[in-house]
Length: 184
Image: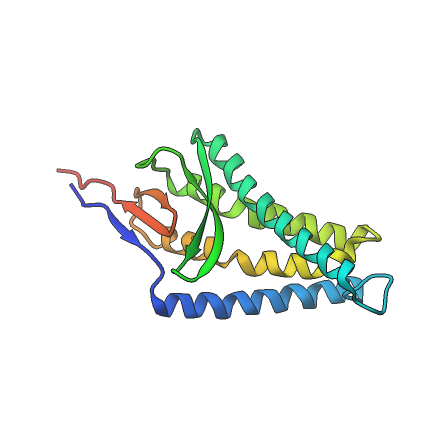
């Protein structure tokens, strides 16, 4: 029987994740600017109210992101647990994981759990940018959300690279792989 093993981002991975995060944020802002033509709708100045609005919206998107992970977990029969951690020992991050340690999922279930918030929230932000007159307020929060998706994308990439038939256990700071037992 193959032994389970864990994957956590290395220092090098964290550097690439941070660079990728900045890149995704810039892509998000550029796409939003193309769609909206402005960062601050209806105003030429940015004050405290605008900054607070952007911060509250950004935090709301982060909470919604984790809630969607939780709904995806429930959809595959897992009770979720939510919390706050320091990703890579430095960057504060919200997380969603299984309430019961040792809970594993298939690669398809893991794809749903990992990718659902990325697809759903970015689609909602894009639709708001295109169709909602006040959607311009989502430019910065949407770009920050997109940047924050790099951790989920890293986890999904790691899962896709594992042997066929492996099962996956989401950890607060990484992924535990349970390889399929070899046939005798």
